[in-house]
Length: 490
Image 1: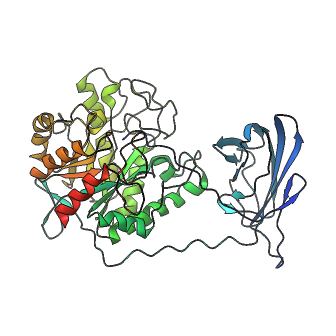
Image 2: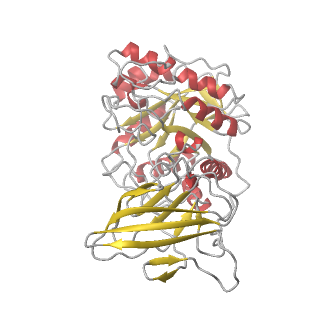
Image 3: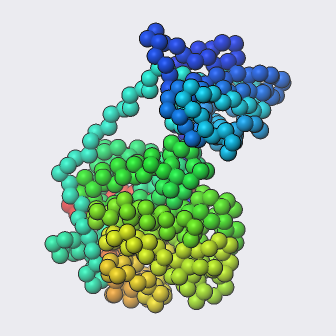
């Protein structure tokens, strides 16, 4: 799917002392020094607006860059500011360093100010976080313990044998399961890393549906830790969270399928999801600037764990930008300067090369044109893979062009006769499961793989949602997939 919804904000609390209109650092009885302190003050206020200021003091190791986050409680809205890059999403305000004041040594302070609107009440924020660390408290609260993943599960190491997927013992396998959306959009929107819980209980709930695969959409800017992403959701923090989820999925004997969902590159042409250069929506193709680096890093991270499979790019649609089908397929395979796309494109061959260049032999999936709904010339333009572990990926929803058995017979069956085929996303926007029932039967009859979109508690207006609760309670749509997987896998 192209447009996952925004999620709610995480709001946390901490003790602070109010002095007039300013927040003073908390001093505890023990006299311990907080990791950081923030003085917040309203320096001027009028009928509909006010001027605010923050003074940030770093009491720990020196920082080369900083980002302060706090929440307004009464609908206040920042309009402009100085000495920091100010932004606001819903109630959450972020002040990030300018290029000239990013260094914040141990014991050093920096001040910044802003203008904002208010109405009715102008309560001061109660919690401040500097680079993810809560300020004005003597110690960080202990993290809520999570159940460790079980150690009894073993995820299979899959590889291609003819047009089948087989495990290390040569047994034929199918990928049957769900998508777990969130990692592609939460971080770039500044809300977190995943949408909803990813603890062991929530992963076990997926396994209890008798799923054997979980597809995990990712964001390349978050993985690479680019400067537009909040530090607490970027780079090492993001990678660590993904690795932890992968480990939990494997511990329950399921295959983790990590995929590039949103990427850098400005596209404003036909069917553009956004005009932003950043990875805030589905772009028509991967970008040459960052996508090969993303896959080199992902493959390097997981190359010693061949139970992890790689899906190169969620839903290519160069056919919406280019004028001919031949141009679109050439762009899909080889990238470069593609007609109608304003950024340099990384083709599927570039991404296969990036993965294999690390020495990774993991299974690779490559989806076709038309948001992975068109595989009509996939065999003609199939990328070269020296390991032979390349799989065709297909997406189908009731509203797609290729959403009938006649289309599947004419375009998918010839591909599936030569290489393994995985329907990485199946779903419908009807709040029922009539279409996916038909699709699953077609794939079952041919021994093919499929994954339902999506294991998130959304609703029919924002996309097909399999569950209403992360304990695995199915929606009326999700009942179809759950009952079918249980019937197949007991």
